[in-house]
Length: 146
Image 1 (cartoon, helix red, strand yellow):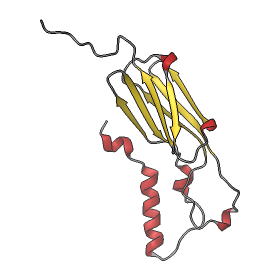
Image 2 (tube, helix red, strand yellow):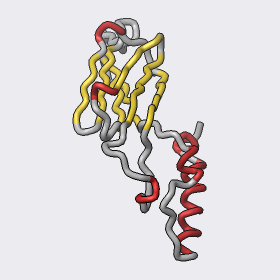
Image 3 (cartoon, rainbow, N blue to C red):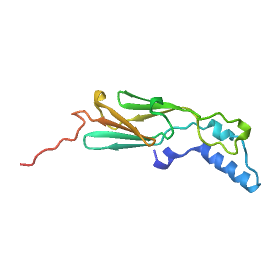
Image 4 (cartoon, rainbow, N blue to C red):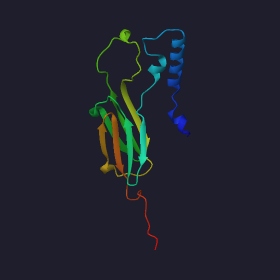
């Protein structure tokens, strides 16, 4: 799959068009657009295949670490949790509402086999880092040349 296609969000494009029309006609909407309501937020990720480990970094800003769950099943890693509103604001008071609140889930197919019992995770400054050690069989073999 083309890299640009994996990042394409048609609902975001529709929302951008809607916003452009609003600016053109000199009006702003206080309520979220239909595109915003339909769009589901998923964390953006980096998957790095290092010599002895696979490292997954996910952007999950504003989420309490107790609200993040990580599960590993065969060759897939799943990160899920929930973003919560800090305070209750009446809908008519919003000038613009773009942040997503609610549950999220992201499943990643791992590039190689990992040791499930040695997985480590850290969460700092909105970045979740999951370090997954490769199995012995998955680590690169180095042969000496006689």
